[in-house]
Image 1 (tube, helix red, strand yellow):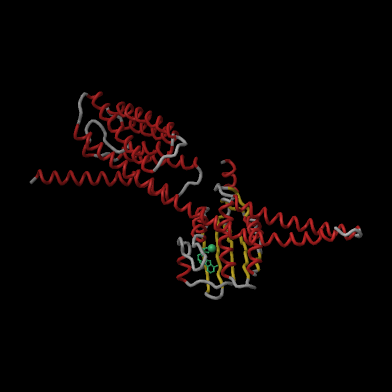
Image 2 (cartoon, helix red, strand yellow):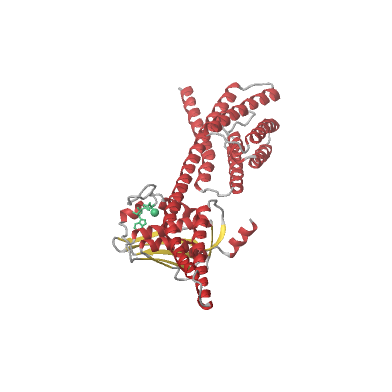
Length: 435
Ligand code: ADP
Ligand code: MG
């Protein structure tokens, strides 16, 4: 009976240890994907810090069941993953943390641990250099990570045998099994999360192509007007006898129209080619002016009056210009599409208590509560030729730049989108300029 109880106790112990370690290992991965870091260097810092913490926690909560002179825990998993997904700098930093913590904990095994992880680290460095800038598939990364994890276990077995002249077979095998299973499930989770992320980015690109081609139609129409005017005046200039005053006037008008055509085209091209995302200091009024200029031909085509921004609060925000423009453009475009001819779309800004509010108000068909709730869901569209991606891209984008979206709408009356951004304070701007 007591034996039976002991067995049960052991199993509970194992489950407890494993749960704690799963939490320690999975939590940073979830956090990482929850708060997407936009630059590669911030990603690396995050990976370095997260895996360092994981390593320390793994060592504080080892697998008690298989404890003997050696500490058995899952520290090698974050160590391996930091190198696999972060590269050399996170690998080196987690190596330092691992060895530092191990020597701090003390005991006979510390030197052995140093050798195990130095060898494993060396292998990782070779792997990182070999596959740097090379395309690898998800499956290759999972299999590769699994093999490295097995190698880690094998090196551990060798070093322990070599240094203590004993081989605690049960402990070592249990540990290898846990480590292998742990690495594989984490690798699988990371790959799955990254796949979702990639799909979302693909949506964003798809939506942009859609908008670019739709705008192109109205823009080429709009460029034709000044061209017709210019053609007319050049024809007038062909007359032989023409007063110098008149001649100058004709030329001026033609030049003005040329400039107008040029600015329509350049606004469009600027939007069409922008693709990268990076954080910049943005003057919201300037961004709005550029967006409105770009949207004017489209509004004109639809017979809708587009006005704004009605008040200038000259506020700055941190964000990505291309992303911001696309997000606001999506909302304005929806507003214009929802509004019947002779209606209005008004854009306004207001600075209030450290926040910038941007309002986009249309006098269109409006939405029911149910429709508002569905905004931002992929493929939700009530339009015959709609993609239902615009609002999804917009909601994600605004959220990524630290903003929020609030929608008020009355069916048949119109819709108001309020986007709120934190104002970039002087300290934020300074921090940004320092990099
Ligand atoms: P799409 O414009 O391709 O339909 P969106 O994601 O941009 O896709 O918009 C999703 C849906 O949200 C639209 O089909 C429309 O029903 C609704 N919607 C968005 N903005 C407005 C608005 N200003 N007025 C009325 N309905 C809107
Ligand atoms: Mg749309």
